[in-house]
Structures are given as structure tokens and as C-alpha cells.
Picture 1 (cartoon, rainbow, N blue to C red):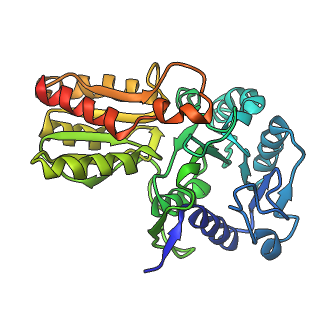
Picture 2 (cartoon, rainbow, N blue to C red):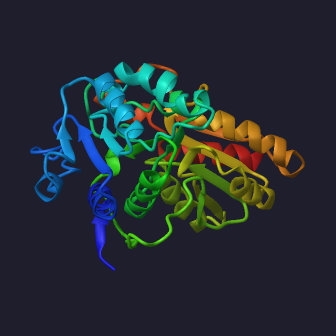
Length: 327
């Protein structure tokens, strides 16, 4: 099986979805002739033409607002926000229109829109180019929020997101764009996977480690190091933040009695807070230690020279594991 970078897996998912359904079209800043700033949409304009791969003005609110109109007209638009820090001009369209129209119309309006957002740090970028704003959207009823950890996830989740009749916010960990992984492709007629299933990628019996997006690779690195010292760790790739797959996490925490959650978003009011609260309710009598959370600091995202101190490093996750083992 061939290995692909995560960015290429997204490109191939877009291509296959567009081949399977002529209602799928793309829109965003510089996604056509340039192929996007990360070249994720490279080659799609040549295959599908400017009617289905549309370069837009630099106006995120207009991009999302136009997509809402397209979806009302029967299309299935996939739009790109060039960097996560630029999503906020579209915040009103996303949270007060896109997320609410199905509810407001008593189910008469469906908005099958995917909003692709490169996100996270680790690339040495300037301000507004390395943030993790997923909590804003996971907190918003009416939106699904997913994020892949690798190329296989990226293809599978994006195909499912495009097929979903609900609006989906699809966060892409840009620090992993060029990390390669084997990818299984689905035929147009194949049923798509559910969007809300977490994946247990490593089984252990001492500690459960849970994360999503770029932190999953760090969790695997940490788990492999602890294995050498005789401590075995689960690694759970959450994949979906709204809804959370609580059953999968609770099942593993019931077995290990300990949970460490890691993500790049600030720890304060981060997705890990919701997961920790829900798991302590379900697994209270099985927990051997308080649930630990490792995330970004409660500060604006720092300059590139300070990224390593801000992001959840292996050393910080190690310290959290020591705390829950020694409790």
C-alpha cells in the first residue's frame, strides 16, 4: 500500500468526492491556480475547472456566506480558510447562521458544508498563523468538529465530512501536512465511516493517553518510551471533538484507571476540560488518580522562538504520566 503525506490525502479525498458527486465544489482564497498556500488543492482546477474550483476574494465572511447560499441551492461546498487565525471574520456566519439554520427551520434546511481550516503550531509561523481555535466551534451546537492525526484519518474523515448533511468544521494539523502514512481509498459507492468514532491506536493497561490532531504523534512517542520502562499506555486518537466519542474513552479508562489528555489548544476551557468532566462522571469509581490535562498556555500564541515552551511536549506529557502513576 502506498504512503501519502497528509496534505496529499486531503487532495485525493477532495478529488474522489468531486468525481463521485458533481454537487461538490470548492471555494477559497488562492485554491485554484496556486493550489492553496500549502498546495493542498493542487491540480484540482485543471481536472474540474473554474466552475467547481473557485478562487474567492480575501473575505472569509463572504466565503462562508456564499457557501451557505450554495448549500441552500443544492450544492455541497467545501471551503477553505487559509489559516486558522483568519476564521474570525467568518465567525458570525458560522456560529449564528450556519450552525443554527437547520434548527431554526425545524429541519427543513440542510447545510452540507465543510469548512477546511489549517490549524495548530509547530511551523514557526507569525501571529495568526499558529493558533488552535477548535474550542469555539466545538462549543457551538449545530456544528460537527473533526480533526485528523495522519493521512489515513485525513482521507477517511474528509470523505465522511463531505457526505454528511450537517456542517462540519475540519481542522487540518498543518505541522503534519508532509508526514506520510498508508492510506486506504474508498470507492464512490462505499459507505462512509462515521464522523464521531475515536480510534484506539495502541492498547495498554496502566495509563490512557488521549489527544487529537498533531498531539497524537507525540502521544505515540511518549507511549513507546514508557513501554521501555515497563509502563504500558493506551493511545486514543479522538478524531471528533463534537460530538466526542465518550464510550471509547470510558471503556479504556475503566481498564487503566488513569487518563492524560493532551492538545495544543489552551488547557483552560479547552476540549480536554469537557472530556475530563464527562469521563470522571462515567468512570468515577474506576479512577485511580485525577485526570491530567496537558495543553497550550493561557496566553496569546507566542512568537516562533517560544513555540516549544507553549506546545504540549513529550516532557510535559511525561510529567503528567508520572503524576497520575504516583498519585
